[in-house]
Length: 444
Image 1 (cartoon, one colour):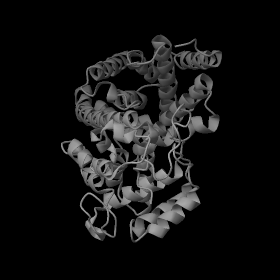
Image 2: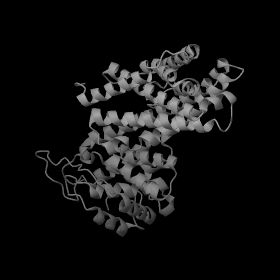
Image 3: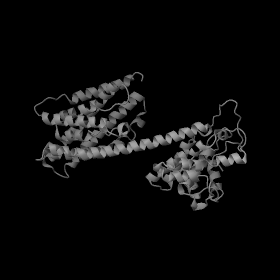
């Protein structure tokens, strides 16, 4: 990694100065050192546990297991003491990228300022008295305000460092940061409030620690979900890369078909879980090309009828390849049937109308649309309007009219910006005619 930009170093230095200002009132006579030490140790312990979590590096970023402890400190302690609780966990945070020391210092300063602000807001709204008296639901108001303050400070500083270190435009840097952080921090805030109330109850700190066990279990399960999702994405990425290497003329086509399939799915009101599986179907629809001889995929001349029949086996090859991948679910039917036609003249089984699975009808439209709007070695891309007109002309015979209409509506809202996928610069490779061997996609 190259040297850190001076603007980023200034951002870190300002955060450190702010953190030192927050800690300036320590020590004073009001500092409950025993509680501070115990909460600091808990914060460090939670971070140590997260270092050997089975989810490893696939756990979601920003979901530190010590946030309930930090917020409990903000609800229980004076601002400077609460800010000090953040240091052990922050300095032990797992850091993947270099320079690690500066990143840890930045994270520690960021958390100190954020927790200090949250504690100040909580105290100003009478939160500590409501915690001692266990006033419900009145204790939720200052606690909620404290969580909002914590989230706002973290968002402000995260966006600032993006602008300073990576020169991200300001509007882009802060877009969505607050909304993405608020939901998990709100859950942590509830756990922190429960800890604080139990801490001040007759049962004492031991009872407060019981809150951490279900919180850590739920956090671990959430991290496991992210690990499984990352494994799914890696599996799909490896298959798509293999197809792109074998058939370089359609590089990037699979990802765009997945994108167009998602646009149709949203337009027809498909739920998020099925839409995600449909995206997998769009991305993997051509995986069966791995079973087709490379000489056929790269043949310069026209295909013979026998060669075309071999290429038309790729949906069945693809279905067999992904048969054992459980998370693909309905996507397997799309891989097998995306070359079927509404009038029954498609392949491999000549299904008619509604006999064709819904996923396959969506992918067929997305596949043909991208094939027509992408530049290939044998022809230039068609304009989006011309491609839609061709899809509409073939609707009812080759394509499901409902899916064609849904794609047209989605494109009207969001537009389409396809990338060039032809290897037009390859020397010595003549351009193919539209009837040449490269026309194995689903264009009408």
